[in-house]
Length: 262
DNA sequence: TGCCAGGCTTCAC
DNA sequence: GTGAAGCATGGC
Image 1: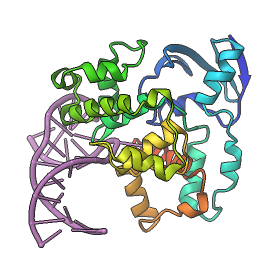
Image 2: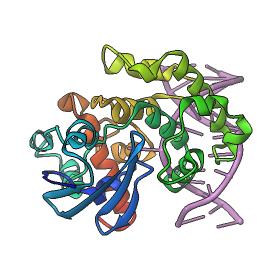
Image 3: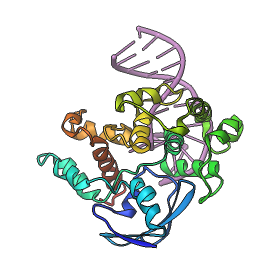
């Protein structure tokens, strides 16, 4: 087990931020995180500290990048418009929410399922597909080999053919061997070419699956925020290179407020 | 019970 | 290009 000092990091908030659907709470500020075919045990005994049940090498090569701990979130905070009251409040409430860098295939599956869906149902569908809380994530080959009926039994509804065809194209395009895009624009256009992936899901894939932080997913919550506080237009130009992080903070904040917690 | 959910495709216009 | 209907299904 290793113990690390961390800044701008809140395990509980990240678990609640609607970007990961397989984390399992195992105790107070403690989670089992099944990714990369392993299960990491994480605990945050104090705000500036995190414990991880893994080797130093695994932490550096796998988990630190996954948790986006190489990235300076203080710099993002410092660039927020001081006159933007809404964004400042969101930033305060979402202090510690980092944007995870998740495996591409897992991100594609998760967010194809997410469309017009709610988070508890998304989690349940992914759990069923994977066959267990700590099981390895379902492979593209397994999805490609599955019948639509099998996929529907996981509660996918009309999204079943979307996921199935996505698996076929993912395999055909060899994305398991790396996804090379010249930039955010090209990546988003590529994923939107999939049947059943539109602008919002493509942005989620870019942001969480490829770490392209120019992606700014516009779901119903974010649209509502923009309509209420930004006259429908968010100043993306001001936040080039990390707008997606702000989106994550606003999404978290708005849902917490809706639940009466913020 | 009815509205809603980290939306998309399809079809009018 | 914009707008509305239809979509599966369970959470609340």
